[in-house]
Length: 442
Figure 1 (cartoon, rainbow, N blue to C red):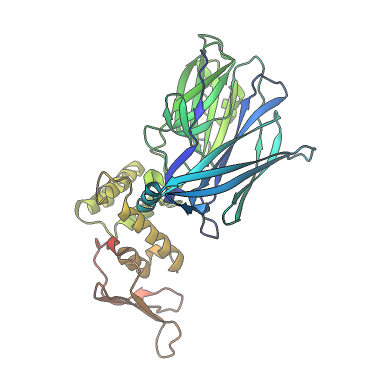
Figure 2 (cartoon, helix red, strand yellow; figure 1 turned 180 degrees about the vertical axis):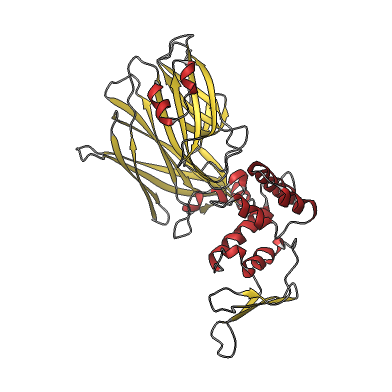
């Protein structure tokens, strides 16, 4: 009996986990290119599936009686990187329908959805290609483009091998919800994994699969999982390998997969040695921008601890200060924000989102001789949010540059002076005590 693999092409993720933000403040769409063996097998061709995930935030939804509708097109153009002749192009029209209740729920929970689509091309094996993807909103006529390159895999007609790997968000029997894009921050613990196809595995003969994660700039294991795959004798076998990304902190990584005929080959520990011994391999770049839902992209773990000391009190403060190892620091950060949830059953942590939004604003606007969040203005902004009014005097001839921040709803003022005229405004009035965090002002 042949197992049919289906894809549920609809993605859900928290707004802060959307990949990069464009100049227009709109999220980019994401895509993946994956090589699979053609069916029937061809010694020259490979099937390339292109997955495109378009965030709803890129599109304009129009109200139509009892629902909201968005229409867009996805156009994909693929050309050989070598300059050889050949052009592969396709355009698909997509429609998203949301009920009024569904649209209101998305807005209320501040969630962002992405609509995913799959596009298939038959290309040559072992070649480099350029890809251009254009998404066009049919309501606003706005266009968004992404460019990239990829290399198709080469498959043997007889030897065991495997396709490219696809990270999935969740699995329902033989159907998966694919994760599209490099940022894996929003994957849920216990639900995600890696899907690929295994080819030409002899019946009842074991093969060894090594799944290895390493930092983008290094060759040491972050983690490694070794599994035994037993062939069914089928020319094509779908493989679903559960994988837990929960303990990965911010940074860029390479996820590698290697297929071996001998168990001893799994003991190699460099990418070069693993590649040399493998029957087949695949790798992909992944990115962690928001570890465990905490949006501290690119931040050192010690900085993350120091930021929380602004608002922590009691045992939470003691735990943050006493954490010594990297793992301990990660755990106390997660525990801190879990306890800050107004309602433990909610998946959305409003205080955490407010805090890190303020950290980002402070870092952009108050940078001086140190990071913006470390400055006095940054600290006040993080703790209390936007002032009711700001009186700026940067060019007063009778005094040093200063600012007066007023929080009329809190009945408090703060004075900052740039004593050395280097945009380093120091607080000269009483500071709010550590532990104050007025997130409800937003």
